[in-house]
Image (cartoon, rainbow, N blue to C red):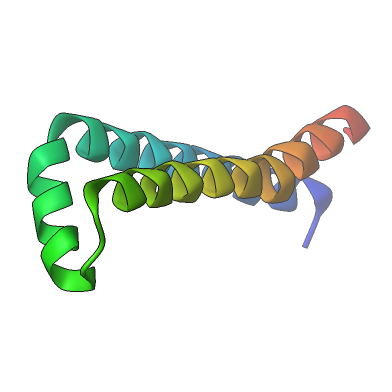
Length: 80
């Protein structure tokens, strides 16, 4: 496997993860009441706890994308 192949793979991983993060954020913002209702029933949490959990999930996912996709992609791009 060459560096170019790894760079291409990381670029696609970055794009796919960024799209999934954007989609998840849009679903949480666009269908807030529905999502809160469903997850409130499933897990027995209050709306405030669920909003904190959504924010925590999106923030952690964004950090994971930066650490595991963006930074290695940029390093490999700078190397080539």
